[in-house]
Image 1 (cartoon, rainbow, N blue to C red):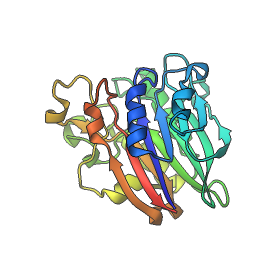
Image 2 (cartoon, one colour):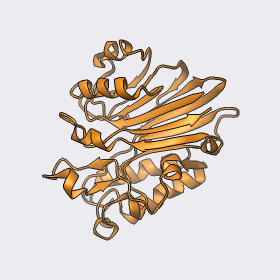
Image 3 (tube, rainbow, N blue to C red):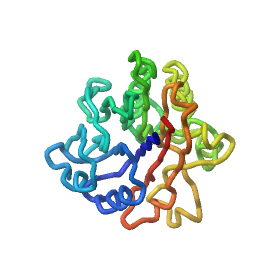
Image 4 (spheres, helix red, strand yellow):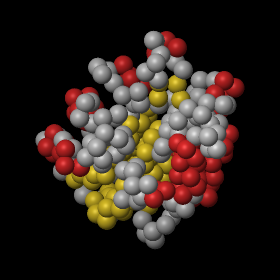
Length: 267
């Protein structure tokens, strides 16, 4: 059976609900993971998603900031909300999705952006980001016997040179500094994670998922970064059929600065 999953930092789910609905009607993924929903659980627009056939909804939200949500047409169980760095931010949830006879643990993450100054001694936001990465090193793709795993989200790091428009110009810019990129690569290697998007779109092909609101002509300048990721346990890699970045979504009405990333697996 085909299994399709999408991840999208939506930058306020209530503000951008029309384009989320349009996306679901057009792409119909089995599972959609949203980040930066900026919405407490009680105000999340669940009815709109249920009207489109997404009956299974897991939420970890807070007022005005952060927030993640996993919306599914397939049943899931065993919801876990992890509090990274003991701060109380709504930045993670996971569920165990039943995809045919296969069980898949889906982690939905929103890693801290880290502020503007890449110095943890003077910038507590950057310190928080590095501490968050350290805790992510404990996340194992094969943590549950008999359960596959997928980790998705706005991880706020572009790990490879070809994940940014200019490696040299961004080496001192938060999201592409060596301490961040090396930290993310450690998380992947130690956790046994496979980068599904780069498996399908191999380096050195340029690939971006985010374009700044500050750009007057985001499309023409194309100064993007690949901040949104889909990883999996090794057993799912051979089942990958397709991975796509929906670049055109950056040009939709009242868009997020991030666009959806979609993978399809043959299970």
